[in-house]
Amino acid sequence: MSEAYDYDLFVIGGGSGGVRAGRLAAGLGKRVGIAEEYRFGGTCVIRGCVPKKLFVYASQFGKAFEDSAGFGWRAGPAEFDWPTLVANKDTEVARLEALYRRGLENNGAEIFESRAVFEGPHEIHLLGQGRTVSAERILVATGGVANQLESLPGHQHCITSNETFHLESLPKAIVIYGGGYIAVEFACIFAGLGVTTTLIYRGDHILRGFDHDVSGLVQETMIKRGVRVILNRHFTEVEASGIFGRRVKLDDGTVIDCETVMLAAGRLPYTAGLGLEKAGVETGHKGEIKVDPYSRSSVPFILAVGDVTDRMALTPVAIHEAMCLIETEFRDNPTSPDHELVPTAVFSQPEIGTVGLPEYAACMEYERLNIFLARFTPMKNTLAGRDEKMVMKIIVDADNDRVIGVHIAGPEAGEMAQTLAIALKMGATKADFDRTMALHPTAAEELVTMYQPSYRIVNGERVD
Image (cartoon, rainbow, N blue to C red; front, side, top):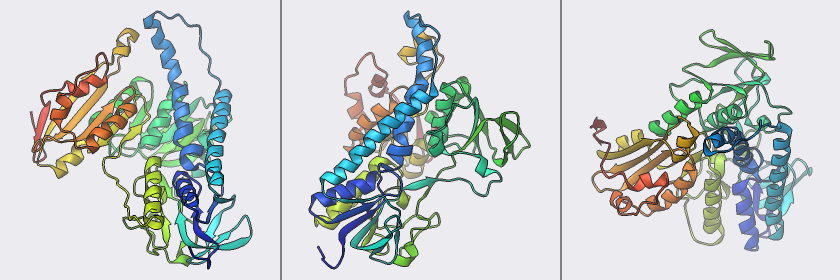
């Protein structure tokens, strides 16, 4: 602890990673300051996964009401009220933000509601306070921002996921640009709420990076549920015109009229205007802060965690990186974050839960693979009369029987992936799966009853 500085640790950014680091350091008796220019909680709590999943739940009730008829229910006409959902979402977000603040305050961290920028290697200027403070260590945890495609003519007529959570009314028709998890999730949300929904993506399949069997099922189901999916196309212009107020032009000449246009073309590290150059911090081509295995930047006492480093943009990963950082910097226990076998969920409809390598990636790393694949109708869909399938896929290193990937698309897939991650992290083999008793009747029992490979892969080539 050096008295030459105002703080032992100053955190720029009040998201999940920054708050965890600030709270833990303050709990160790360190002098901690933390600045946040908007609201505490970061992308996840304020404008990301938490409000999004609340919207996902809301969008599922319409189909649930329809399905209930097959189980003997006779419900009256359902009505949906968008302002009620938004208001209740806002209440929950405010509650969570208060918890983030309370954790910092209870541990003695000093909170600044201000944008903070570098004035030098150890100096931070607080724009909202009009003063400069110093810190022995500085943590940048500013997260990411939605890519607004500023080179697109008419981009100013579009919204991103940020504004989606605060729309005054539910649009009658929306066009979403993108094929990643944010685009897909919101396409499912709006379609589930009765909005005429079009998804446009420049690639030849959605959810690039996910296993093709699960992403393919999601695309198939989205189309069945009424989402218009247009692939291998991109926007050329967005106009404030047309019968609904917005007009989208595509590169093949197609014109689509809608009420709202949402850009979901990825997120970028939020480093613009931070003054990193004044501190000598090296950044990458997207603006990300380059860090070593211990989250140290090119300036060793300036640290970075979370989306701003562009390593793995997931809230639990940012929290994990922050905890490792505290061990390294303040507990004399050098600890690097573990980014292997991180479970991931996409709250599409159907939901995706995955851990480990997808098939295409496993083919590049392993000589021989055994692939176990099940595609079936979930039990709930039988009486509902819903023609929607579920997929489960297990990828096994044939040379040592170790399970290196499990991919699920279907109800509660995310919940299953979290549990499966424990098994894969412990090095489970396919034999371990096989000797585990099935829990009947569940969809998850398929994971332990696929005894023979559906096909094999040798040197990247499929062998049936």
